[in-house]
Structure formats: C-alpha cells, structure tokens
Amino acid sequence: MNQPPQRPKAVALSRLVKLLLLCCIALYALVCVLMAIFQRSFIYFPSVFNRQQVDEMAHTARLERWTNSSGQFIGMKRLSPRQPADGTVMITYGNGSTAVGCDHYANDIQGVAAFDVFILEYPGYEDRPGRPSQSSLFRAAEEAFLTLAAKKPVYLVGESLGAGVASYMAGTYSNRIAGVLLISPFNSLIDAAQCHFPGLPVLLLLRDRFPSEKYLRNYDGKVGITVDGKDTVVPDKLGYRLLHGYAGAKKLWAFPEGGHCQITEQPSSFWKEVIEFWRTNGPPNKVGS
Image 1: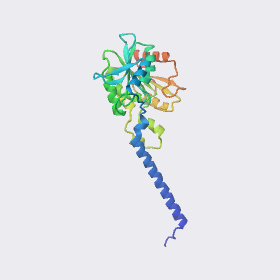
Image 2: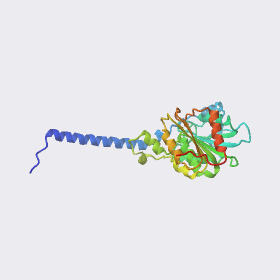
Image 3: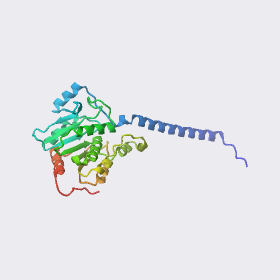
Image 4: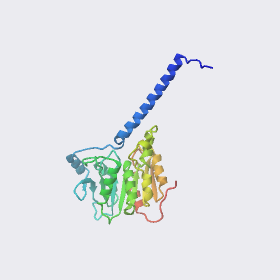
C-alpha cells in the first residue's frame, strides 16, 4: 500500500528540527575550534613590564635579578641573610603571578630558615622574552635549576600551574631534589580544564597538559600538598587525587576555608611544618588514600 503523503506542517517541523540540530552541531564545532586555537590565552595570564618597572618592583620587594651564565634574566632571587645557607628553595608560581609577585615566599621561608630563595620567571612574563607554553616553562625551569649550587639541598615549591612545573622537575631530577611542596595543585591540567568546560572534549583539544601525577611517579622524595576547600580555580578533589596517587613520603595540609593558593594557617607555623617535614629522617610519613 502507498504511504499517505506527509502533511505540510509535519514536513516543515521536521526540517526545522534538522536545521536546529545542524546549527547546534556547527556552533559546538566552532566553539571547539576556537578553544583549540586560543587555549593558551585561557591558561597563561602574563603580566608584562619594561625593565625599569621590573627593577623598581624588585628593589621594593628586596629581590635581585637571577641570571644565567650568559647574563640573561631567568628570575628573581634573595639570598639568605645568614651565609652559608642551609639549602635552596626554587619557586615556580601560578599562571597569574610573576617572579617579583612571589616575594612573600622569600619573606615567609627566610623568616624561619636560612634558605636561599630563587623564583623562576616564565618566558613572556615581566620583561623576560618569549612565549609561555608547557615546553617553554619546562625548558626555563631546567635551565634555571642547573644554575643552582649542587652542594646544597634543593627544595621545590610550586603553586597551581607552577605545581605542574615543579612536578616535572621532581620527576626529571629526582636524585637532586630533597623535597617538594605543591600548593593548590591539580593531578593534570586535563582534569582541571574538564571541571571548567565539562561539555568539551578537553582530552582531544588540550596541548599543554601538565600531567603532574605522571611526573611524580619518577620521584620518591618527600612531597607536601595543600588543598583548599573553597578553591574555585582548582577543585580540591584534584589535589586529593594527586596526593593519593603519589606512592612516596607525603604530607597533606587541608584548608577547608581557604581559596586558591590561600594558606589560612600562620605563615611562620606553616613553613616550620613544611621544612620540618622536608628535613625529617626516618620512616615515610604517608597519608592514607
């Protein structure tokens, strides 16, 4: 039997639904393409200044330029007032900060220990030439690390995105790094991005992935991790994921009322605990999963 012809209204509705569906698919594809093209503008937020501005800010912060063997600017430093220092701390900051903006770490750490503090500057930030990316940050960190005195214990402090850089360095130079502190870290940038863009195929789009959990598999030293209960940038579950996936000696500092990279404990008390954890010998202080 012949099928009865469709009514004009039904045909028009069917075509409209198909058109809307095609428009939604095209819009979704466009969003994915734009995210892929401009993804680094969502990851890196470089503050750019001229040399004079950077020098003035550094002077106010009691920091001096850290340069490589060729005299090129690679970061900021403040040596311990008491020399010889007991050790060295290298800091890799979060994507929205700068080396000068991390002077508070030098203040807090040197307030409780005789450590030299070196703060890596990322390519494209302040007046350092270049463009930020995972590979350029890793290269910059390696170059800077290799300028540090090998005879002193070296510790790493990484915050947020910089925790990914610190994790890479710990896994790459595991025999030379005495301890690590990761402040508001993620286990991988893929998971962090997926939390903010749940409807996008982040795994397919993201180029800079900072897989901290992968890098730390090659490190067996002491790792401290802070998580913040009110962190809207890196959900605390990602810090816990990194913590529980690490098999070495580890210690957790949880701040239920803390925001992103916000240590709600008194700085002197917190850093005393961190340094004591780094320095303590004996059985690993493991946190249960």
